[in-house]
Length: 76
Image 1 (tube, rainbow, N blue to C red):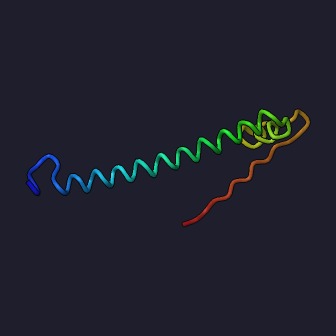
Image 2 (spheres, rainbow, N blue to C red; image 1 turned 180 degrees about the vertical axis):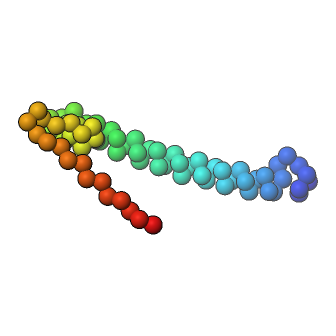
Image 3 (tube, one colour; image 1 turned 90 degrees about the vertical axis):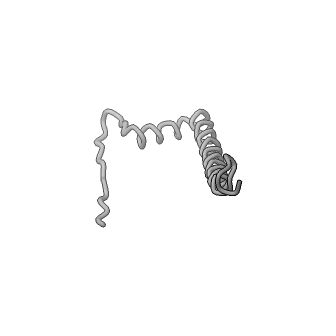
């Protein structure tokens, strides 16, 4: 019964670990959803924030502007 049952100790340990991993993932996703909702409300309420977001995320620019993208390379 200790090692041959469907609910043996090693299986229970694995299930507890999986449950902990899932709970941690849920916490992380809940935090991410909250942050995304705050960002959405900020974008809806402020045209300046919407413009900043569009410029940074989608590299949008005004017709009379030049856009320079600077990428940093991290060497290992």
